[in-house]
Length: 255
Image (cartoon, rainbow, N blue to C red; front, side):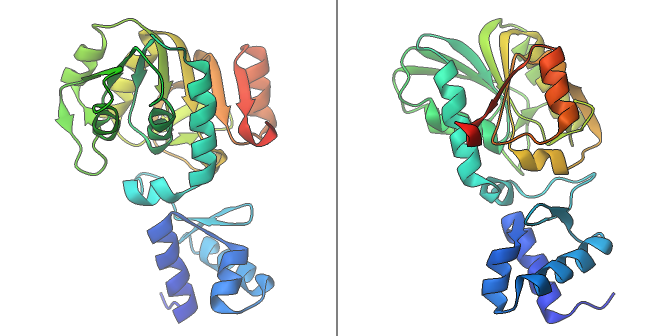
């Protein structure tokens, strides 16, 4: 299929950064926002991008985007979510932290805590927290995914099942409007399910772009968590699930 030079550059920018915004693209190309909106609509019609409010995402479906690109998506929102989660976790607590860029933001916000025992299948989290003497880091064994440093597989699942912790901090690659929590790798899903089953209080951390995505493997359901922290939730069905299942919903954009 033929792509104009501007369309090709927009796709490359979305691939590099995870998402593109109308106003930023209009400035970059020195064209009107209306022109960019038409560009994005055309690219979304061709299934080359996925539309979100104010811009577009690099598409997802059966394949996740690169970890570094995901780190750049909604970085400020993830930082705020991380601090909100850290405020719920007291000193001297035990907790699981699983793989993900938003859970990694939580680990950054926990660095000034004391007496934590952190069990993780996330090499990025372990490497960040290991140098802090007030935090004990325990890392799961298993198969290391080269793409993102996640430790997955049956060995990791068996390892997680040895513990019963105070808190679990989990993420999801996508959240369906029916409350299904979704991921791309069935091996990681098994680890996440073990984490949920072996924590007294489960904290789900996800920015609102996860409502715009899809993934093929089911982790569980929103009703299984105790607290859901996001930057914003405009999905009525998701809000209803939180209310009916008594899930604490924290929206950082409103605090």
